[in-house]
Length: 275
Length: 306
Image 1 (cartoon, each protein chain N blue to C red):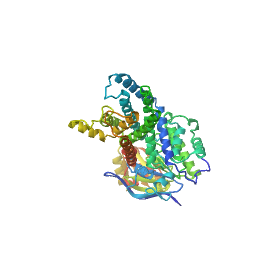
Image 2 (image 1 turned 45 degrees about the vertical axis):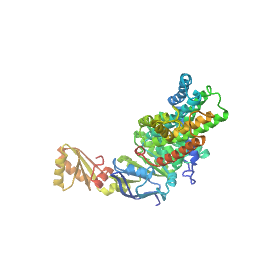
Image 3 (image 1 turned 90 degrees about the vertical axis):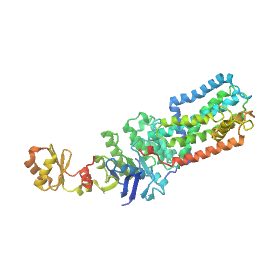
Image 4 (image 1 turned 45 degrees about the horizontal axis):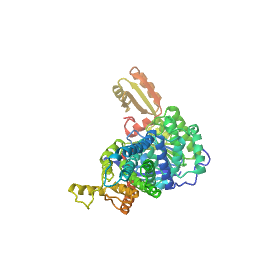
């Protein structure tokens, strides 16, 4: 103890700096957990090998090449799972007690949410960019501007999805709960995003099933993620897709709404906070 | 005497269960204040409300004349909170944990370097600075927790069951440090505990029972309030012996398990009379000044550990 205690002047934390520090912590933690790093590198490589060598040969799709079709879909798959699973750290933080000291700190709730979301977004981006880099070995026609634009778009997608993960994770008290969410929410979100099969086109004669499928797919925010990314990679497509403007609008709107929802839910206390 | 914490008509319920009822108390500036009570007495609820972890349902708390509900942010800047369950990031080193905490309070640059060095030195963790906290013993982790809670030089330090999981030597160190912190830096310290001997270390004790404040005074005054001496008799048939004592001496002994308790003035005389009359039936007899447990029993009519 020194004579300087207590200080007369109270320091004030900048919410942006706090968010940055929280995000940095997520990244440091990520790299210190070897199994997570191995998984993060292994997953894109595995997808690349699988889709690049295996499925490429059997791929038949209305004049589109494999790369045009599967690269954006796989990137969204990687973003979806990594971004949402990165928010498992909220459950860990709560169970390990770390979250308590953040909850009683003099910082606005949004800055804590932003920190978590940026951390998750960066971890997801690392993997998605790794896959993109590997894909460039197969896809030669993408320009530097296209790559830059795709990374910007991937960031927007990852922010929205991490916020969604935050909302899902906040009330959960065990990581097991997350696996249930994966099967009932994430798999359908990806399968019905246009990554796996195209959105049924209104120009053609649609059956009732196809009409319903189209509506469900258009309500799925990941549809716009996949389509928007695909539009960055290819000039035009034979398959029907939402317009560029609509894709970017929906993705930005989805991110904003999810961020607001995450901030609102973070103001509530759960049983796990009160141990 | 200025007041650090002022609690007025504070009540809290979890669904149907009333955890705190109409609690009113104040904590003087610069004191070590214990909130003592058995588990379920309401002290943890009080800790959560005071530490701003949970919103206040009814009543109010002021810290340094700031309202906890209306001025939460300002209160948070002035309090240091040490939780009972660990709040460290195990994957980060001691220093990283401290720096992370510092960032939440806007402490950086020269000030941060100065404070982290000062705290690690006074808590004896400087040589562990670069070790991950998952590798530290429980005692060392508690020191890091304490350093975390003190980084921003709070006026009020709140600790929830600070001795939990610590061995006696480490406990003694902790109390020495807290005493120094109060004496040299003038920090007001409030802690919750279910350990009677720990509460003895406080300048003032608030005793909670079933969500109500049953006593609030210095340990000496609390004991004096019971009056006289405390006699404890151990025997095989406490019920029968208790009745005999009641009939013979016109006293009202309390029988708890295999012990008979008596509170009387001039206990030493009664001890010799009891030994003359019932010496063969008594295994052990103890004469002492009333303990906090006696205080608790006299205020609530319950055994502390019931």
